[in-house]
Length: 394
Image (cartoon, rainbow, N blue to C red; front, side, top):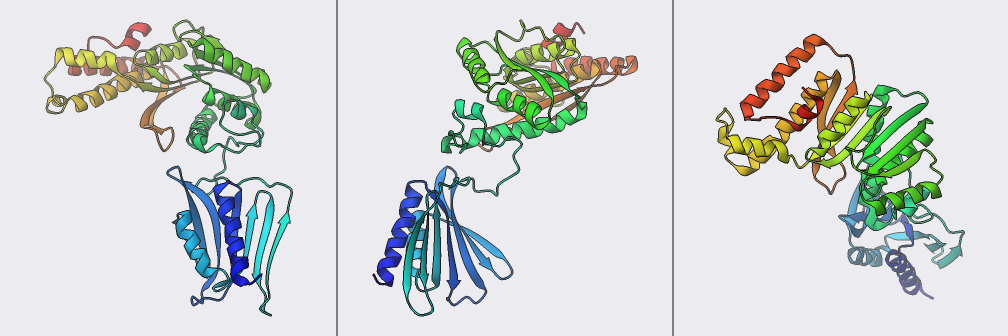
């Protein structure tokens, strides 16, 4: 078998490994080309905008350069390089190492060595990050169809896995502010399929070493049944799911209350539950701000921003800001320190506002000043009442 035949066979092995998702990496070395500063090239498979690509890292003496190519583009390059510019190539797959080499004597060898199956690397294009929730040895991620049994994240679940980790990263910084010691009781209002609820319990229990009691509240019976079964399967003894609504839930003793994307006034119901319970931390991501918008549209108050609100899209944005701004003021009225910031759940979903409230001390002077701000805001925008205001009896 001559050089051309062996290089062709090697390229075929590489192509097959790319197409059957067994490629770990390809290394090209012993460079004899015209660029004196180039040492070698490392190639790996990545996903860019959910499309498979090959990421080439060109290693120079003083720098690295990364370029991305389709399979077809790279195969043409590899045919030109192998045996001419590069005299050594090593292909690693999940089940074999394949070596191509042209020796100084001119002899060409192609060897294939079977190995114990190795783990597939992540296909994310960015460099691997230190994840607070790793994908390996997580039975709940397998049951929720995020990973396979070996802990490899499915291609169609990459976005969800990033969302889970970003959520835990945000919460981890907030949890540090309340510094729980030992036990912590958490309520997740509107837990859905439980992706984030499971991850939070895992983080509290297995990363922080706490003794958490976490309950997910969800009105869909099938999801409650599913999540309770998964919690039992993975022996998350302190995690349960209850069928019901936010209004029905008894939040007594809750240290941390979470409500992500509770629609319209359901966010107010969740906030009030946290206030009633004296929760140390309240975290909500509101959506569908209909209650205040209806009142602004009804009264059409003439004010300094009327030139904006005659446009529907600006009116909608204003209603969102006013609704959440008053929510923050009411939390402050009850002695909470508030933060409002942008929360991006992952790279492929819209941005959300996150309202975070940490329990502090109540001051009569501050309460009076805050109450005045709420009244002024209502008058300015033509608001009769805010749902949270009625719940709290302000």
